[in-house]
Length: 218
Image (cartoon, rainbow, N blue to C red; front, side):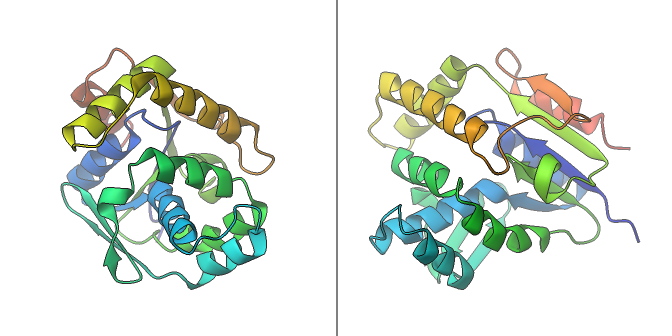
């Protein structure tokens, strides 16, 4: 049986998670938020006070960490039995995840964890290299982006709504820095797959993006 895969790649803050979850729910498919896997590892590394230069130890944590995902309207994540959902969107977590995601040894360990999400009746995979590295065989691919300024505004509003202190200028700078790091890393850099549908969501509503994506799926 050929189990379908829809990949949605793009930079941080482009709306991949919201769109992917909605599309997965409409289709009745499984959902993979690969960013949350890397962010969960980042939290484990931060909590264990492992230095970012200690690649071997980070890879070992990646091998041994136990992750549980619950996805309904929102994604809930447990790391080694502890709910870490509220810590996933913080800037500290995002920056740490971007650093360790550049290590080939870490990406190799987490590759199979991501592939294990591919189950019937189908999978919507959200990340940065879903269509280029993890699931290059996917028949439907989307690259979803938005301007750095728009993404920073969205992140700022999200954090403020959750009562998290935020600075718009700093968020914009961090997003631009993360973009460069993700695009320039030697392994699995952030880039649009040649056969992907390119969507700039800067001036689109979430519903408009969802409809564009849904039109790809038979």
